Length: 483
Ligand SMILES: [Zn+2]
Image 1: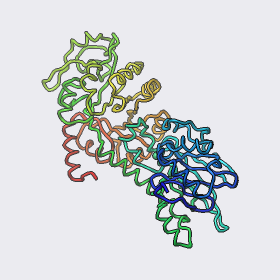
Image 2: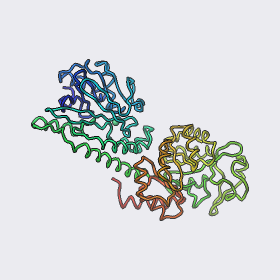
Image 3: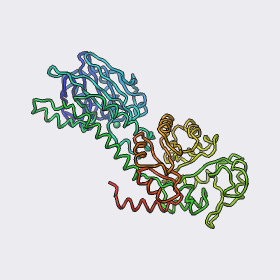
């Protein structure tokens, strides 16, 4: 015995052949064997030995079905392919997670894989990964037929923002997970098969089985209870992230105190412990990206026309003033040189259509893709930049977010919704979180709105007075410590 668990018959023609860390199941169809998941590379030998120990011939394994692409379910595959010569199945979306082999078949949602006396229904249940699949089959024991089911990716730690960011995965995967759980709840399951032993308490049930007449794996209540737990866990992950990773964006810098969108304003924001900067990008007449908010320069300079009517040199003649403090226009690239290295989040707002590729190139050049969300009030601008640079996270600024807005954003892969702060409520934030969105509010002109947005469990806000938000977050964190 190499493994930490003995192979055993779970029910009917279904056997457990995995390890405590990664489950693997064998189905004897009468006309060949099907293996569900292959565990880690180093435990492929355990699976092989377990199959043999149960009295089966490895060369009889015809199909290997993978629940998803993560290494603890697929790394054993190359070795098992050498031993079995089986055909493999995986979702196309999850090919990016595997290496060293390629699946013979991609799943189709709702497809039934049949062999001998067994039909396995394969349902797309993305979230844990983009291509997670769940399996359902009838099993017979003592003359009775039961429905067995496996949720192919139940873990929610992989949906923490830090994890998603590290892997370059979409925050919308969270919304997919909730949707998949809803879909799985509609399936009746008498025998819950875990693809990790802790999902369905495989080990405890196996021990009970040794002394019991009844098969402890038959339990038609367990499936729904487990799904509800998965749901609650993800809700907790999202709420925890909204506190631990809350972004206090200095809006155009600390623009209440200093001239907006200037280095002075950004440095003041950093001094006030903002952990994000929001700024606006436009292009000058001579093709330089600069940071400027308004359509015209009149409010800040008294002169006519917009940024695009002036060259950079001409714009540099103007001085912006606020509260007796003065500074000049900032070139986007200079901003990135000074702030791009910092461990902060950037909200870059596109203010002109047509300059999206240049903005994306700059974000790539200064390597801030992983800590940036590009936003705009113009949906065509964020669509354009996403088409040009699909790896960028995008968000829509909107006054009056509707269900249609949410559907449209989801369809284009936008991961952030930016409602006006006055429309933010805890109920709406919870609803948008359930769709998978990051929620960042804007338009705050007073501290009451600031407190409301923070308390609604939103994920961030742009604020002209980041010092006050920093203070509020400190007070709230002390009152209600994390963890
Ligand atoms: Zn996984």
